[in-house]
Image 1: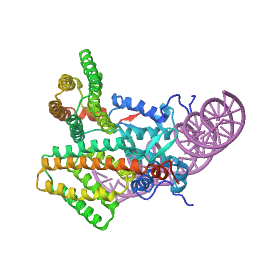
Image 2: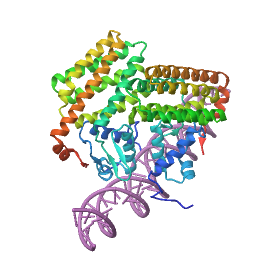
Image 3: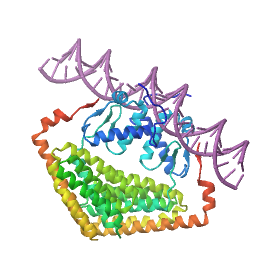
Image 4: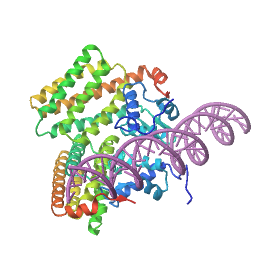
Length: 239
Length: 239
DNA sequence: TATTGCCACATTGTTCAACAATCTATAGGG
DNA sequence: CCCTATAGATTGTTGAACAATGTGGCAATA
């Protein structure tokens, strides 16, 4: 096997490249929550050194997509109800706070929002629910981009990345995400009409409803599917 | 030189220990903004391997206390006016949002706030301004702890850590921090009286005033002290 | 049978040395 | 004075080695 060393053909470091590969596999659900990522196996599979892999681990840990247990390794976190509540509490504060703090609206920043709304509607009509989720996330990322604040955007990016892990714990994403496509459009309409305060209130309720429905999904999952859940998703190991 | 390998006598990893050493030096101002941290020299001085040092770098980069330039190394960031505005925008949204989202108040969580207020007052009377800043930061950290939300607390921790870098760019901290000790007490009084909404409004104005004063400090510094600033704080190198 | 203690094994934590790739500064030519 | 090329210094990445820890099995015991 020919192994490249040093220059890797792009401007991103090898660790970042590896981190992006793993990030995609985790966010897409290929590596379910609870899975341990073995250094030895991933080194063999990805063709990088242990140190570089561990650096990639750190980048993902930064985003909450991996958790590190000292002397035990890294795992895809299993988010529970408390995490869900925590994530939505932060989302409400940040996203609604962003809207309420706006003094003016740059129409150029509203354009990408419409793109995402339509992408979500299109994907929903085709039944591509993963794409619906992705477009929805990009929509909310675009919402906070209205502030042009790097740190707020970074915070939101991390929160949304973790939220994807929640979506992989609860099943049947379609029933959850379907109605929020419509509410995204309603939200955008309010913003385009300049009704910022009203949009913030709608978003607040939107997020409360979403949290409540996800909590319901957690509860029913724990009631009817705990055995199945334990069999399929716990103590896995990424090869 | 006897070099310890493996077990280091505590439950934290070597990288975390090194990160804490560097964190203190950076937040205390021993390593001014703009300084490059040379791997070679720090490896020699701290007695750890390059890989471990680089892991410590990652941890600090995570908190915004270091910035990484690809193929050029890590630096203590020099925060400018835009960063200052960004940090305070996030502070206002998070800290005020936390207060406004409170439904009830746990008196037990208010106790540490009073401790910090009195610590700040005591330190101010003794003229120990660094300790005033630290107590002030712990006060605001305690404020967001009212939510008992891990992620909100982490976000605040990062923001406050970065803010310390701002305080090292502008000089004369005493005149800036003195009056905020009093406002901290006023804030706490409002909270202890259960006037949460009023406290949130006071905090909002508090943070706007602080941002404005720091911006003034930046402007005067750039006007009267740009030559001195360039001489003392730019392109340093940590030995 | 259930529990405890011990030990071997697998995995992670850390170090070290080497080389590749990149950046920076300097010197030389136009 | 500006541009380019080269040399030196620094970071990026690798691979191997050993230390320390966590895990699970096995035997001895109650």
